[in-house]
Image (cartoon, rainbow, N blue to C red; front, side, top):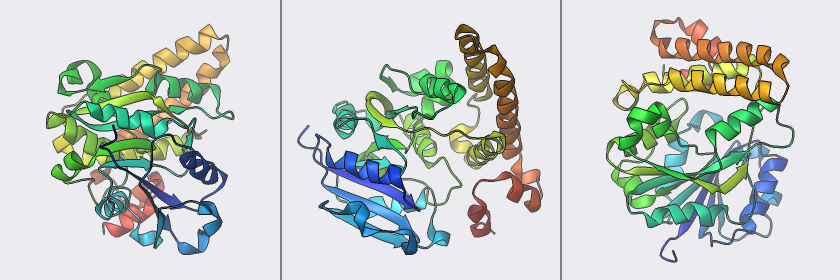
Length: 308
């Protein structure tokens, strides 16, 4: 395990208390971190106090129009030196001091090109979102390969840069993250990995606290952008079943709500699921939509400006 050197990369925009907790959590990690690269959007929102007392931290400032989900991470990876690249989002708070250590363990298997951690619901998380977290991030670790596509469908490609690590040699061999994408750079890369015969590991013991209480329109817009990313990359996603996984989640969640005697929450589940599905279907067909409609549907308006 000692042969692995770790670079941590964190894109940041208007950091807050969760980012401070993330940095404190990184200080306590049992596995040594060689360097931390922070890609901060807009220098005016940055405070050096966030990294006070921490060694080997570099901060690079970007303009808002320079930021790209894939491109910014790829830019950081290109100037990093670790042979394991660990990515966090600014609101992912390590649950303990073993997150990096547990991610690194996945790479003992030479076929593993990427590993991602378990996202636990925060204490303010609503019941439905909490169950969604446990559905997408179970307590048991697994390793996914091309052989799992018939059973898992699109979930085979699932990987999240909220907390994920990549073997540098394979990352570079595969050409790294796509440098211009609306969203979903992690799954696009993981999908390519799987299709090339490598594996993606899910490490349930690499735990971060990360959840959102999205409203209906936020869910709609997130799923719109997700579908746009899939429509733009048929070389990865074409022919891979995805809607059935969403239906399975809705059924399982409804069953859970009955089990915990909260059946009235099924109305909220149905409405939010409808918004998710509509956003997804519109995103898949975005090329047929006028720009004004796209601007209303997207979470990432700056992406569309840069693609004109």
